[in-house]
Image (tube, rainbow, N blue to C red):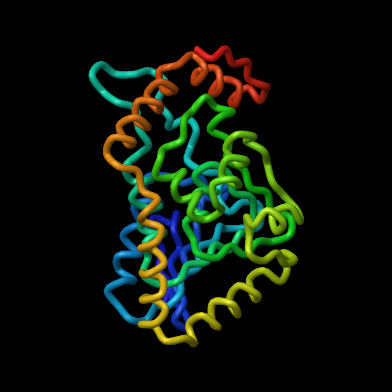
Length: 266
């Protein structure tokens, strides 16, 4: 079955595998609010039926998995009596992928940055083409990333690796993706589709209730990493401090002007 949601998210089900394709190649499959809402709604629909036992998320084309959330959508002028925060629909879509009952696979057909990297971190397995690059750059933009996303990185890669990813804002590529545990498998671009489909089919051959039960139990361990209310308030204050800083404006301007930012810590 093939469907299209405003052409930005392509949906397919085949051999008990659900496929979601981020389809915005002219903007390197940037995550728009419409696309994120479609992801959430389609995953809700998948859960109502028994014909999906494994989910594969991929990007359209072979240049980008996702370039992340559109940088121009981040507000730089604070409205009175309002807090700056990540878009609710972004948090909801990432949570929907992270908590999807069946095993999930990110098929990294191209580069993934920012929220695009976060999205693939929410998947259980990451299978990458051998020419992809991954990067998380909020520190280069003057942003303190939201705690929900940082928790998802810690759950996927551990605390030490998460620190490296965020502190350096490096772009990771080649064999270091395997060495650092950022992807589970790396194959030539020409073999990626077949390898991923075969891998997903192997998962679907296992007992569905066992898969769901094991994933649910693993999630119970991960829940212990969640911040309490006091720490969430502290994290919110730290995010607001960054959103209200001159460094944020400098980071955005440098990004758009394709130059190195000059931060002053204010």
